[in-house]
Length: 144
Image 1 (cartoon, rainbow, N blue to C red):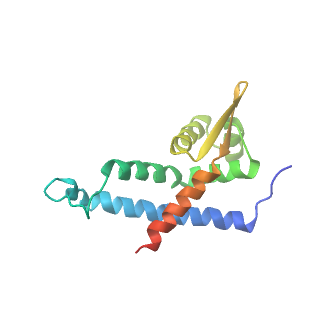
Image 2 (cartoon, one colour; image 1 turned 135 degrees about the horizontal axis):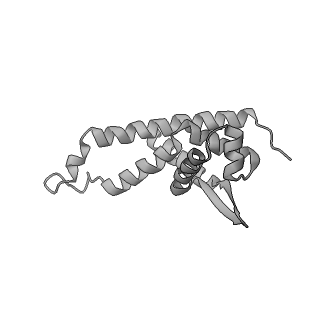
């Protein structure tokens, strides 16, 4: 049975796009705003320490979901519960290689899970990870 798209699904998708955009802007500010100067020993204090490695990893993860095609893929997988690469590129009308590259980014960021059944690999949404990124984004945005 195919799941129908609801207004709540559409609002969730738009909210996710907004929140990830805000996080990327904040992370770019940190990176390009030269705030990493505080990592040098003469500037480091107990009150101000920036873990550059964690910040870069977080930025990479957020960039994984801050792309309209990857968001469309997530929404499509969500609607169908689980899908193969061929089903995804067939529905979206894009090349298989492009689909595989974007799914790899989503998988590496933890937003999709894979399960092999014979020669097929099925992708499904990792809902706890989506919830985690939403909660983190809301926590960051609520503090300023």
